[in-house]
Length: 279
Ligand SMILES: C=C(O[C@@H]1C=C(C(=O)O)C=C[C@H]1O)C(=O)O
Image (cartoon, rainbow, N blue to C red; front, side, top):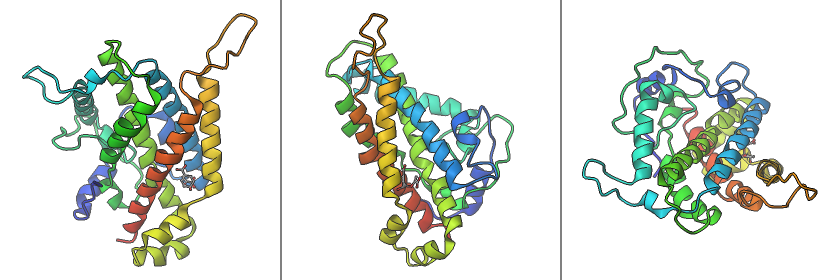
């Protein structure tokens, strides 16, 4: 279910204008400064592909390792090892102000502590309603139910902590990329407000989806991530054979991840954002 709370823009303004600490280089140079353009947001998406492909390669070194996702038997801890690691990591990240960045979205947003670090004034690039769009529950389900079983080998090697750490990295990278759709939508709206305006006023999701979709760009993205998976994930051999033709993660699966989930979910975020752009 999409978390959409349409009231209290004051609270959202606080989130957008909140503190910044330990910035992520791949995402902060473009959209949160004043030079927002379709080119700059696309550059950021291209750069985020590297993070996603590397995080998938890291995860693929372990088999599925289902005990990492089973409820823990310890009475002091509830949920799975993976949930525990994600929740505790998000508590620390909240304390250092990460979720006051308009580019960061927690998977467990309830009961997070307030930042302890000094506030940072982000330029207010997005409409305040952006702060209430969080589709991490959909991303979580997609990753564990559909994608993970496809790209990990069956089995259990006992490395549950390392496995969960890798899942956390993948989830964070996917979430950042997909929610970056807010910036993509903002720039598309600014470039063609006369086209988007009527569809927004009519709350016409289908027309918005058509307006923001560029099939040729999507084809390029799928090809490029497949190529990146080949280059970043090739087995390197020092003997005469050179390229062994083996990859650490199946390049066609990375392309499929983008085609079936990452881009459709980025577009879902774009539509949800645009529906509220004139509130
Ligand atoms: C992100 C954009 O919007 C849409 C979504 C895309 C994506 O998620 O990569 C690619 C093309 C568009 O259909 C874009 O136009 O660059």
